[in-house]
Image (cartoon, rainbow, N blue to C red):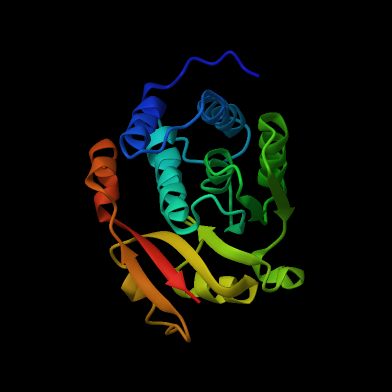
Length: 223
C-alpha cells in the first residue's frame, strides 16, 4: 500500500515474538509498518498520540499493544472470539490485535468522531477484520453480553473499566488492562463485585526493549 521505510524498533519487537515461537507473516509485518505510518501522518492533524519531540510511537504505543496480543493469544489460541477495545483512540491496542490475531473479531469503540474516522481508514486500507463504533462506552446497551474479551489502554481507572465492561461480557468474560503500580488504589473507590483480579507478569525480554514498562502490570479481570 505504502512505500514506507521499515522502523528498526518494529523489527526488534517482531524478533522478540519470533524468539517466543510466534512467527508473523510478511503481510502482518507490512501491516504494522503501514499502520505506524498512518498514525504518524494523521497525528499531524488530530491528536492520536503524544506529539512531544522525544515520543516514540513504536515503543510507547505499539509495543504495549503487542503485549495485549501476547496475553490474549495465550488465552484463546486460534479460536474465533469477539473482543471489544474500549476507548480505542488511535487503535492501540485494537488495530494491533486485529493485525496479529487474524481470527479475532475486534470492535473498537471511541467517543471521538475524528478518531473513529481514522480507525475506519486504517481498517479499510489494511483490510482488517474489525468494526469501529463512534459511541461512548456507557451507551453500548445493544451489545450486552456480546464479547468474550475486553481490552483497554489508558482509558479509565480500573474500577470504571470493570463497570463499563461487565454488561458487555458473555459468561466467563475477561478484561485485560495495562495499569501502573497504583492499580490497587484505583479499586478502593468501587470494590469489585463478583470478579477475580490477577496480576500478570511481563516478560523481561519486553522490559529490555521498553524499560518504562517496568512500572506497568497487565491486569486480568475475570467476570
